[in-house]
Length: 170
Image 1 (cartoon, rainbow, N blue to C red):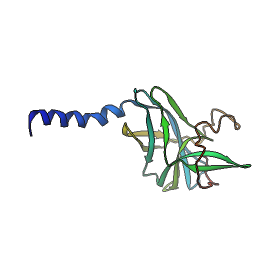
Image 2 (tube, one colour):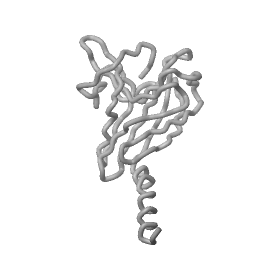
Image 3 (spheres, rainbow, N blue to C red):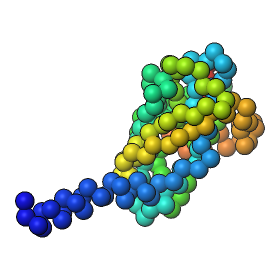
Image 4 (cartoon, helix red, strand yellow):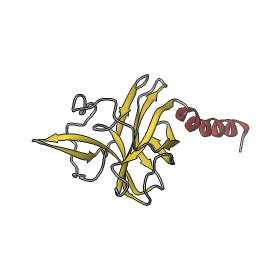
């Protein structure tokens, strides 16, 4: 391998590390609807501190059988929780809120209860920034910042299809 190729390979290896440093997570917490719940959710603020638009495209954790990116949409008179397969856009220099009643990370098929005081590891995968592992405290007592339905649909995709979840607190 030539010196030029070695330098290029090294620079390419640094790109994901530099890109993930552009994403910041603030105030994360996770919760379940009850001690017996089979699902739970995580909420946080994600800020893209970089100069390139990005997208949260996946999340993973050992806490459950499946982890999906979700939101809520109105379907007639019924609020439905749906998976957002295309992920959540995180524009350059902006923040998105993952919050109850809106965008969130959904844990389906919990392997053990989410107990207040515990912490879980969640890997967030961004289209450009790559993987970022976040330690998230469980806080089942935390109340949402906004009560009621105001602003619940912020960031919800208009064409989202999906399924209904009755026993979760996303």
